[in-house]
Amino acid sequence: MTSPETITIRRPDDWHVHLRDGALLAGVAPHTARQFARAIVMPNLSPPMMDSAGVAAYRARIMAALPDDTSFTPLMTLYLTDHTDPDEVARGHADAVFVAAKLYPAHATTGSAHGVTDIARIMPVLARMEAIGMPLLIHGEVTDAHVDIFDREAVFIARTLEPLVKALPGLRVVFEHVTTAEAVQFVESAGPNVAATITPQHLHINRNAMLVGGIRPHAYCLPVAKREHHRLALRKAATSGSAQFFLGTDSAPHARHLKEAACGCAGIFNAPYALESYLAVFEEEGALDRFEGFASEHGPRFYRLPLNEGTVTLERAPVTVPEEIDVGGTVIVPFHAGETLGWRLRS
Ligand code: DOR
Ligand code: ZN
Image (cartoon, rainbow, N blue to C red; front, top):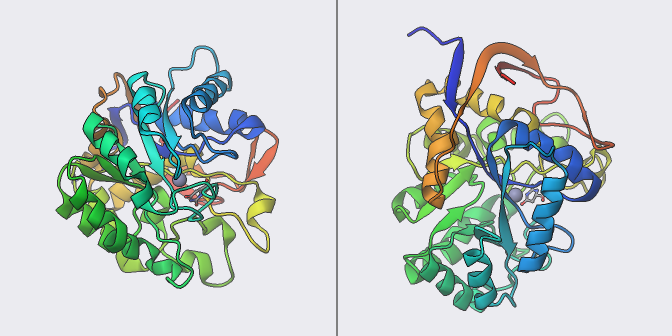
């Protein structure tokens, strides 16, 4: 088979991104808007976006951070707490303030201190979401101190996710940024109401990238990268053509000095070269023909949104990712810093 020099796909979307706020937002958002038509925007700001008014105001700040003629559409999410009101959720969804709600187990990750302490507390909210067909987005890790951090996703599946989808089989669930073979297997066996996003970093790196030859904070995100066999299971799922898996970068920028610290922040800034990064994986897996489904079709179908009009083209050309990027005055080290990728998004 000859390898193509260009690849053109329907405009893609990012189904999981952190755009931040304030000065960082203005620097970060254009990177996502350059690559994607739409993005599901995470609500884990400080304080989190836990009511309709807050979400609507945040959406306005995102639009203000982009040029007036931008074609980018942020798709907003509500942050669930122990005290979320089902009526507020239904109203905000009906009014198109947000398209989905995000479940962070309390203290699982950055900005999750106000998250849900016990899923039993929000069952009325989840039952309402099931009734109205509103997607629930889940950070799937338990937080118990005695569960090993490399096991937290698998334990969450057994302890929380399996019982949840059994109790509410009509609830539409996106298991975000899956990192394990167990998660892939769970999603595949769960049926069409359950889907998962997969990040570029979990397709490219295993935990060695973080720990071999020195501790590498720029490879640290949550959930953490796992063993190699998990990475291989994720690559297989992403490139399988299954409509249950789609693109979600989890691009999560933190200032360089906040990652290169005694207690470094979790999160990898992959937005600037996200499509190039994913495409490298699809090419290595001999699955270029399945890239469009993963990047541009499976996500909107799951969210019941129209496919985007228009296309983007990537061309075969070496692109060296900068060692650092100035994002609105903050220096951030991007994913693949210093590496050369084989594809370039045509502007
Ligand atoms: O690595 C991560 N960073 N994982 C998350 O779940 C949150 C994110 C962030 O907001 O920085
Ligand atoms: Zn995230």
